[in-house]
Length: 379
Image (cartoon, rainbow, N blue to C red; front, side):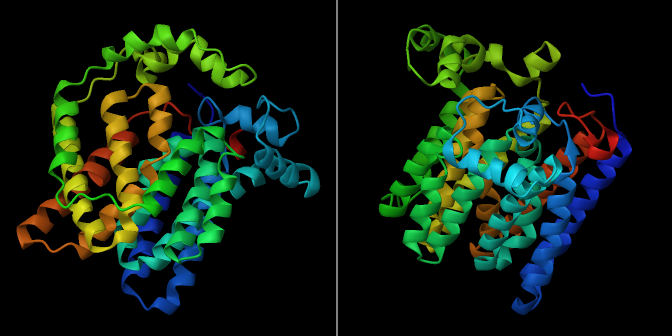
């Protein structure tokens, strides 16, 4: 746990950022299209500065800080990641914090481009993107840098610029090799339409796993994983050699940090369960109405499944982060595009507010963040 910095300043800036994103999301959704740039630039400035000027947030922060100051901690860094870091730190000679600002700017810029195509979804999607991804994007920096290129690829796909989409997708594993699977799934979803007309199978899989899956089931595969040898990939081989740590509840984030498993309240579990049902059901309807949303919808569904089967086990949580970032888009589109009865819309509205803006935000405000709360001026 970090002891430096002001928790008051940390939450003041976080709440400011949420407020700015709500304001800009509303502006994008309901003001004239010609004002998109004003709201987008405002959102990008606040997001990139507040997120980029952080200091030592999460276990991986110092790792990427050392990369930016020339003391490489990334073993065998991927080609494009190394180019980006050297371009910022050596060619441009920028201080390390400019690197983190740049990474944050790329991420929010990619998201804003999506909401240029789906502006009415921005009032929900823009602040929810921050609330859902904030702590992870602050820690697993290189993964979210690669995710920026997945989102850029999705924007190119939405604009029917397929060659550009392929170029962006090729960049992803050259920044973080673990993104290769999400690239493959992206391509498959872009090429083939999943022939489901109703969401009942998807809902059935989710409900079955939610009530009957046990994390302990992973223990049976760890012995086999530890015997695999990948040769030159030192980092991945380390994951396999320590598979009990990474693939079972030994690697639970809460267990590692606090020495005990995460205990979720019954109320929060109920709201999360209902929220996932809503996303699967109404998101399915949204992507039937607009086939371009198939990628965003099934990415969101995969994230939900990873979350159910992996909980807060670190490795599965990292897999989850490869797919979660388009869920706010699905929620935003469902809120304005899917036909609903008045009570359905009010119920969905209430659950989103309670889950994200009341429980999620307030719970974090009254708990010291495990990922740290310092900014660069606190060094």
